[in-house]
Image (tube, rainbow, N blue to C red; front, side):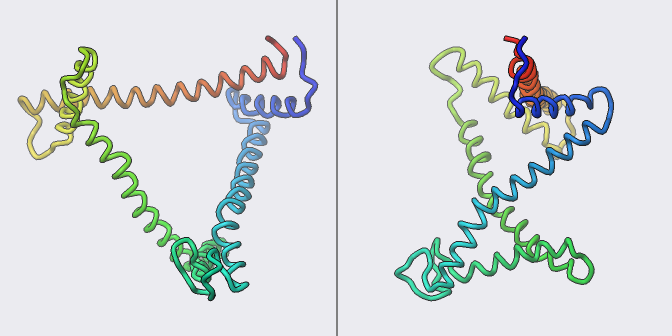
Length: 228
């Protein structure tokens, strides 16, 4: 056993133990670690978003635009917009971003934050709808129309199970008829497949959390206490 002499390791170990203290009961040490984590995370992401989003996509293009040139120096004028070079038009999203902070003021100007929120939600929903449709829905449809008979018996068996699970799970959500007879059997089979899928997803989540716990315990035992 060789205790670490690094002050950073001691600080990390102290905060880790503060977080673990919640296993006993809620206490000031846990609240301190919780508030510190939330505050540092918020500050980090604010700085990160400024340097990776606001400055390159809003601040610098506007500075170049007000000096007479934009991203494309061959085009002059404050509003000489083209793809990737929107110049003065960036004042519009900049203004909407500022209006978001009127919610913090409240009173008679708080309602102004609804306009940028509406734009954000509408644009985000439109972009994500097409993105998820191509990345999830279309990919799942393509994967579900593969030939049942594969090159190996194991792959063929897996494809048969997949096909049965797919069809029965879809029939589970078919509510135009009462689930009796063959439809009832198929819907119950689909329910079992759904439960297995949800259980596997939950188990994967638990395993990922346990891996984080193991990592913290290894840090305490090896990096802090010096057990090897």
